[in-house]
Image: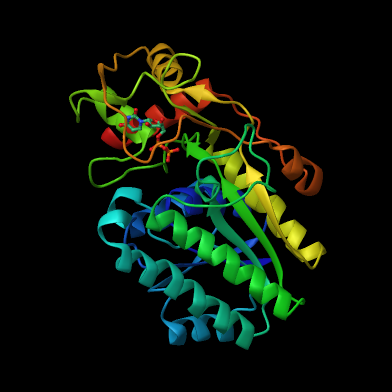
Length: 333
Ligand code: UDP
């Protein structure tokens, strides 16, 4: 199949490209490198020993998109391209609504023009807001606590309205839990330019002495050790979930949502201690007050993705911690 991957050089996008190429699919990427670099495209080629077709530009640019759909016979689209920093979205909501909603609308309109109606959309467990119970099922009520999350929820709604109006659309909405880790080669991974917001990239930078100390946001939650609990999933497992999702949208014409997580919850302290142990390195930390907007615990019920997509995450947190650090060491070299 020929797959158009928007944001294909980002963290999840780049790993997904590798899995698609390994599976023998043709990959066309559109990316504006706003939070990645061209070098990642070279790394993807190096890992897979295959070529990809790269279009540099914005997904909001309908003429560029039209050119792509006219040149390439795209079978299915995986839409990753979006801004994703929660804190920034609170400060700059219009930037987030303009980019995340605007580029999605352009993409959907041009897909419609070219009668390409198979889509996998990158959503997030953030659409569950403060979950009413655990583990989280796809049927739980949806709400958000920041503009980034609201863009994901709004796009889910747009997709549902679209599929209702035109049932020939086939759409898989993937709600990611917390992706961490990196490609086992160490060639691609997560490398935020600024001070990271997320836990694993922060741990890695402290271990690497780029940052002094990790601040753990609260140890007074109602969880196993008082620190926040999340469902960490290896980015390679997550990438494989996209492979299952494109198979699903090619085979069955419907819209549906799937949790991509492991179903296991680990606390901040458990993740830090595992990281220290498997990498044999110190990660100094201090306990500070809770981060506004954080929830105590969040983990998936992954059974629907298993039933419907045949997807099950396989890698454990030790491997996630090893691969995340391996990427940084390799890049230092
Ligand atoms: N966290 C932390 N220190 C950090 C970053 C995150 O203690 O520097 C905690 C955060 O409070 C949460 C967990 O780590 O309990 C995961 O946070 P992350 O931002 O990675 O994911 P999200 O909160 O979006 O699930």
